[in-house]
Length: 163
Image: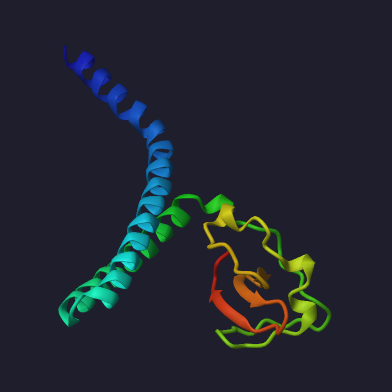
């Protein structure tokens, strides 16, 4: 009897262990989409509160937007952690004279750093927001930066984005 119980216990622990990564990935991607939807809803509520509400309504709506952004960032980090292979890329080969220096918003790249060779054109795969007109996601070392293609200025940057 003891052998049967131990075999049933071992079988019950083996089957879910093989299904956990698949379920975790699907749930994590869904959580990211739900958090994005919640953030859009809270931003819409904030705009309505700014138009028609009083200070208390605006303050509460701002708090909701801040909390939704935090939740979205946490869900995205969880997704990134569970899907590490998506964020693995080949070694970065920069333009001639390349030496990595961390960049921040407002930094101005030389045109050779944001040419077509460095564009991240499949931004949806990495859960990056769609770039606005005249901007492009660019790989810089293991970072990814949103660059204004006309001026070369960095609009947004995610450091240590790729593994």
